[in-house]
Image (cartoon, rainbow, N blue to C red; front, side, top):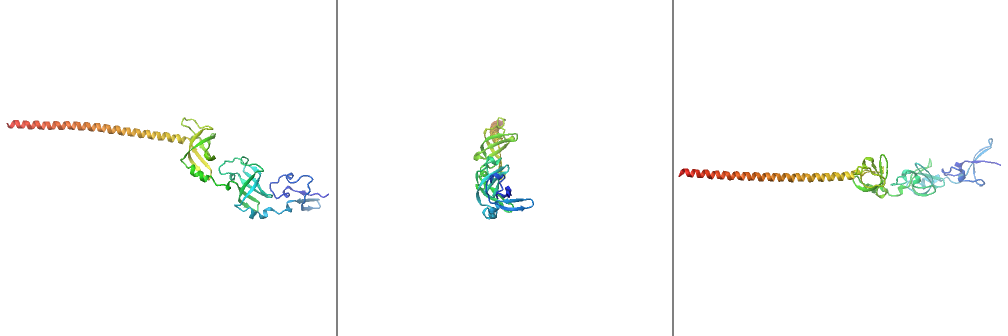
Length: 282
């Protein structure tokens, strides 16, 4: 009999096919197209995908940038998710394009193989058969709203989720994660915040582009202590001013009393001198 080889890359237009058993099994009858024939070596290579149109021929129109589609997760790596839009059309969702707010360390925290995902085309390279897709772009960027809520200087409640040498991760409202540097997790009792502590935090840095919020618990109580000290200082100043006024008043009264007495003595002396003159005249 005549035998030929069908390479795995010639079985399907899909780039995700890695194992022939995913496509064929022993005993299957298939139609194939002869690709190469070497009579001397008695070798023949065959292809199956050539019997169907190349889906990338119409990709420029069907998968134009900005178009939305439903894709199936085929594989995952540390940097992203490989999905299939149709047989032969594959694309990549970078890990940074999965979610606006959730910090995804690995795609398997967000999705799983076989799951359906809504995607939008971000970039299309027909020549190199590459599609860059996004998932988070189908939703409004919540960081536009977070920017108005978590503005620098505002204070919010948060729960410490983990602590390390650099500081603490803090779960804020709306599912937002913030970070408090080690010098900013000191409590008023001089103890460092620990996991599960529910504390107030002041926003000291906000970056929408980097999706980063830096917070401080220490600033919240230091501000209160500073405010109390300022109030105490103001009270002491008022007390000193009032005491000073009282002293001045006492001194003023004393001076008036002394001057009054001097005036009386002066008048009495004048009267005595006048009487003495009168006596001399008699």
